[in-house]
Amino acid sequence: MSSTRFGSRAFDIFNVLVMIAVVIVTLGPFWFTIVGSLNNGLDYLRGGVYFWPREFTWANYRAVLVDSTIYQAFMVTGFRTIVGTLIHVLFTSLIAYGMSRTYLIGRNFYMAVIMFTMFFGGGLIPTYILYKDLGLLNTVWVYIVPGMFSVWDMIIIMSFMRTIPDALLESARMDGAGEYRLFLQFILPLSKPVLAAITLFNGVYHWNSYFDAMMFTTKDSLQTVQLFLMRMVTSADFAQGVNASALANIPSQAMKISPETMKLAMMMVVSIPIILIYPFLQKYFVKGIMIGSIKG
Amino acid sequence: MKWSLGKKEHLVWAAFIAPAFLIYTVIFLGPVITSFYYSMTNWNGLYKTMDFVGLQNFTQLVSDDKFLRALRNTFWFTLLVVILQNGLAMPLAMALDSKIKSKSVLRAAFFVPAILSPLVVGYTWMYIYQPDGGLLNELLAGLGLGSWQQSWLGDPAYALYGIVAIVLWQFVGYSMVIFIANLQTIPGDYYEAADIDGAGGWRKFLSITFPLMAPSITINVVLASIGSLKAFDIIYVTTKGGPYYATETFTTLLYRTAFTESSFGYGTAIGVVMFFIILMISFIQIVVLRRREVGV
Image 1 (tube, rainbow over the protein chains, first blue to last red):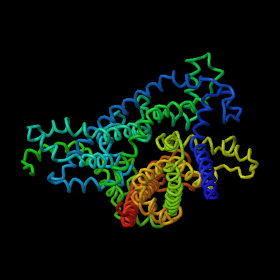
Image 2: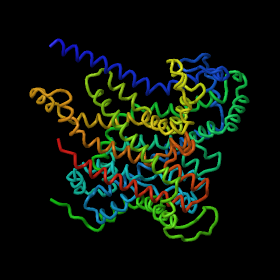
Image 3: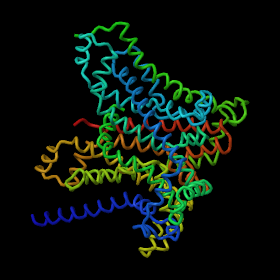
Image 4: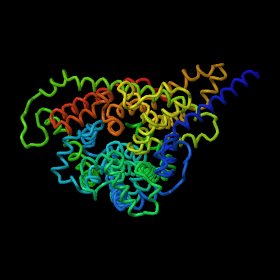
């Protein structure tokens, strides 16, 4: 008996050690970025800053936050995140409700057509040509319109709406409620958990997007924060430019910043909003995925 | 009592479906259909003129070394990610579903990388993999393993594995959360009954846990496969398919062919082949894995 207890105790300790190792591996890379971003930029270039800032400073954050182009990029990303997500949730839940009524005429046809691209977007090239023909290139709508609808999200919302009993809707209909009132007064409020999940996920998607900005826009005024980050990291000239404008904006901090540490600060700045909403997100994540996958 | 449905209701439901369906047809379905056409032309994407070349692009693909290498890389990459991601996520999920304290904090920690933007993830790891002064090489030196130091993403022998490691870092937590949700649906009675019958831990895993985990295994395998076959961001951000094409996959080859080498027609043909391969693989996986699933 005591040997089993010893065995299970040893197993527990082993388990905890493995967990600690996994936590270090998971959060370590992130820590390394935080430390670098909080270190004096010129000192950082001497190397060896990994686990704790050698010369602590907030200057890199001040430098990236005073920049007016970054501010502009935040406005663009904020716009697409808020407006894009709201429109996405509205349009997708409208179609999901229609499709959740199994007695809808032509439902199987619509479903078959929609499932056709479940695994595949149109491909980059034809998509580019289409956006060009539609006049979406170099407008802010190229961030909003293609994201108005997603098959996966529709399936998740639809599966949830199917669990709303028909009897409830029928009794409301008997009381003379029209379909639109039904949708607004019953369906949407009852679907709150799944809509919350979709809202959060779509918000994260918009916040993290860089590819559409890179492919379909060329104007600086349409730059998103992620694209800004990308240009900062991949183009030395661009990073120098950001550095120079920071020096002009806050000359007193000149000895504390470098393009290198400003990149790290920028990586943190674009991640922090996501991490802040994360606790809410996690709660709904499993729900959303599980609902979707049962039916998917 | 069944509510009788008039023409009017159907029109109203059609109105629910119409906006998103229209967007879907134009934005998603349109490019899929035109991509079949472009894939049979020799269009370079710049001029208005193009010739219809039938299946020539496809026959050319069969003997194209670059394409065959990308095909090999994509499959090898996908196989590694699917096996390792699920192989790591399953034990983690079981550990976190059991009696460890503070498991919700751990769960949250493991999931964080999944919501970060691909740019932030890619750049963080580029800093870690840097040959000079990168965290990984410094750690190896610190452990007395200086001879193991590599230019991790710069050496064709290691680059693909370096990217696999990044993908695992980002998504093991994601698969884990799905496994945990499934584990929680398994009734505790089953294990108690097995205890009474004198079943050991391994036996319980094989006879109870593993079979009842089938639904989440299906989801995780399919999601990881589609995700890896279509992986673009992380490769584009870190290696762009290099060095010496060591990390070239479908998507990076498609991107390069179309936008760097201006062969829109040929690039689209790659996309069409990719579409059928993904469709086939997901279909086979779903059929095979679904057959294993049993109800609780």
